[in-house]
Image (cartoon, helix red, strand yellow):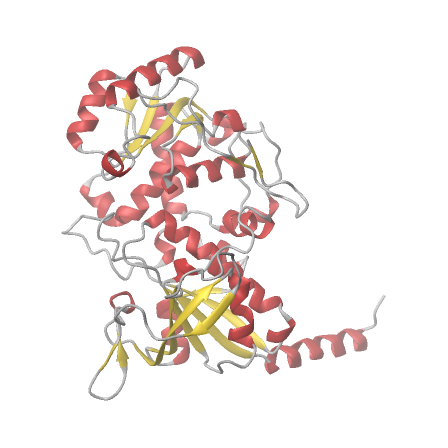
Length: 426
């Protein structure tokens, strides 16, 4: 056993070590056209970059923190014109304390308060290489290059660079450059820590150009598991399940521990509520993914067959289809229920919160049917993997009328609890 004097010395060493670290902030943004669920994937890439920055020996004297970009400006996906859809903090949708247990994070307004002014030292606008893959093979590389597209930032009268910055018009940057990159998140560790810049805060714009180090690996899943939804959204989804779907976590075996790190389960532990969860992606998919989108008549026939097979008489549908389409589908399958928030609830939860409520309800169904190539469906499949549903109840979609009845189903991405696990199966 160590004596009090040794413990005191060790504690003092920890304090000195921490005090010697230079606090640095990493921010990011995405192409405005990227949807809510893909942006959640970009968060995981950047969060794992911060994790690498905090553990790499080159960054030993630096205390990196991830600054969360406010939600908003997703015009195609969030079309409620009479609703404020900008400057939305992450706490509106996610449990920030849970995110913080994977890597240190803070809201943008907390960042401004901490540094004392609305400034970002440098903006790196990420882009590809104008020459493309000249060698025809993949290689990790990064270079400061002339901008391929016209910059989205302009100097004002006093030389400060102004841009969108999530609707905070007083925010500015001192330096802007275009960076061509072809690589994973770890590719950024050297340039950020190796002396290329001494900036205290750096914004990686077009963060979707950062790739996963190991898509589906342990760090991916640890980060994904930390993305616990905000309690108010979980409570609303649970209330709907109780009232309309005869479903609750205790009966359905979908109870999750307060701390995501304490979750230990095996495939098949979760049963799910006595209903089928369905995600029907419509809108642009009807045109750009028409080979994968079944007609409403085909959907209705498939649902009736599955209800009879599973002996279930309730179906929950999450969809971006029009009101007319959903009325038609409900006529074909009267057992369908949907979450339809009041105006007050919609104002409170925002479009992103309503989407999350839909996902929670779908994720806790006895059986789930998604839409091919939809990130919305993919996020639901991830939630079900985290809760340990059987894979044959999770990775499913409805075949179109032009496909064989045994059409290709989604790839089964398995949750990884340990670094030596396989990450997918056919």
